[in-house]
Length: 536
Ligand SMILES: [Zn+2]
Image 1 (cartoon, rainbow, N blue to C red):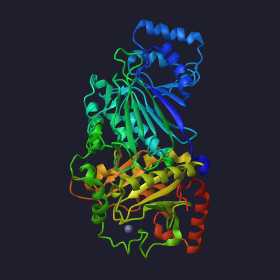
Image 2 (tube, rainbow, N blue to C red):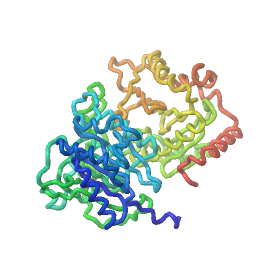
Image 3 (cartoon, rainbow, N blue to C red):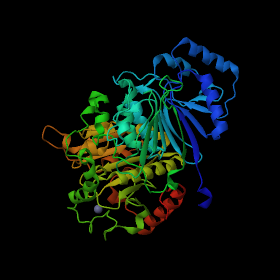
């Protein structure tokens, strides 16, 4: 441990260069002599200029062979006219040692610092995305890929536009009155939405042509504080500060003491308002805006509600006798693989195949829709580790939850040979059709909490590509509710073109003797150990 303690990386972020590349490079090279080298140099805002002289400067610069001692990484274009500079690049290289970061993505440095970036400006019209724009679809994919790769927060987020609302709840008076804020194009509700979801420790943006260092703000449901910094442009008439250097250590080495004027989050607690108007019309109905859901309540009450009320709502099942409550006397202890802070993992009774396991909460929650956010984070982390383990054996994980006639949340995890991936979606769809049951795809960013309003009975399967198919029991409108076939997912998976275990559809008919169960759990625990985020 002691050897790791001083991990620190030096980062420099610069605002819009606007094509003044030659003098910019000269400037930062001089800066290195004075302040020492940086580990990373990033540019946000407009890297290229609009006039002919800046175009000439760029051409000359490329030919000059000027030495750049630290690679410069820039976000992509914010206008159509600048797209030409970023097209047909070799190895993302704009010039020697100047790189285009790409449209969006996240990378982890060798020191474990997680850096996420989004190029371009928001495309509000649901038009086809262009190189210089991002939209709801691309941003929610970005968010999903972060979570699937185990990134539940970011150390640094780089965007060109500012997040909408970021100046709300500001305490410092001179910060409230920053002048010269520009047009709407340079603010983005999707950037706010991603900042809420990925809670960056630092968030830097450009494009407003003013310098603004916000008081650090708290995020909901996490201890992470965010510092937002808006940068001015290099060499501008108003002489606004255009660069910001800082030192980052991995989160594990940060002490908890807070000695800043920390404010509440500037963003609205009604998170869906940042994306609701951007959803394709067919998906908008999923977002309930009623105040019935835990998530739409005012922030201060949120934690309390999760702590008390969520537990109370489901107390009708006695945790003493619940089969899945860890504290229950009925729990089959020999099936448990690993116990985390709020979640545990266990072998399934009557498994479809070997290594068919499930993830459940230690406390009694009826469904995933009731699970509080920090528990959800732990589940997501566990899922990303299970994915990695299965991938190492040429399989992928299929997850499903049946919150219908089920007392305690449990997420079934079934390994599927990778070559069968394509068959899953059509087979689930046709099986539901056969039973005359609805099954719809839910938007990648929608949380089950928003969709189900906590009380609903539902079935949800998550395919290996991250797509979720959802069946809502309460959605039937003609009054007649068909009986839900409890084994429907097992029925699909057991079919000859998938796992081919027709005799195992009903778990009760294929229970194993206890010593076999013990052996299976032991083998899984050993095989999964290198991937298991839960350390004993
Ligand atoms: Zn329970």
